[in-house]
Amino acid sequence: MTTYDTEWILTRTVTITGTRSTGHKSLSQYADTFAAYLGPFAPGAHFYIGGAKGIDSLALLWLAGNTDADLTIVVPGTVDQQPAEARQAIARVRDHIKEIVELGADDLNSAAYHARNRWMVDRTTMTIGFPLAGQLRSGTWQTLNYTRDRGKPHLIVPV
Image 1 (cartoon, rainbow, N blue to C red):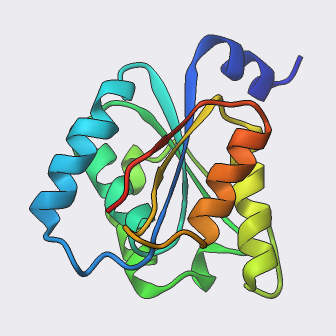
Image 2: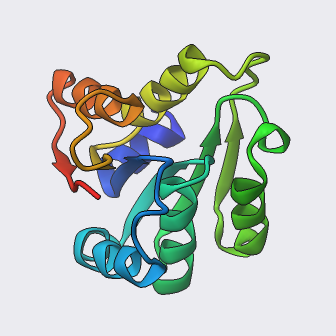
């Protein structure tokens, strides 16, 4: 049995996925959304969050500032390859991050991000997705559909 197997059995593990387009709402609106939809899952949980801008960075900052949940950041290549907003969020709460996983992709294309998302879903018990309202095709939806196809619970919170 691996560390991931033990964690999967003993801990609620949650993948966070969401849009990178977040400028249409205020930070307080996102804080309220995260309090309502991440907060109830946070006690004793371990969240896996992609290290991108948008929902990834906002959820990371909210979780680190408002919960004691374990946090793992997963990037398709390296943290240094991520946008400045994402790197700054990671650096700001580094003391709250349990683990950073760099999957080592050379080219940060759609395939690399989809592989990262599948990696997270494969290691967690559920997914909470924050797709852009009205958008029905995106990386967030691919992650939610992958979760569904694996027979795992998923919560969809349009933003």
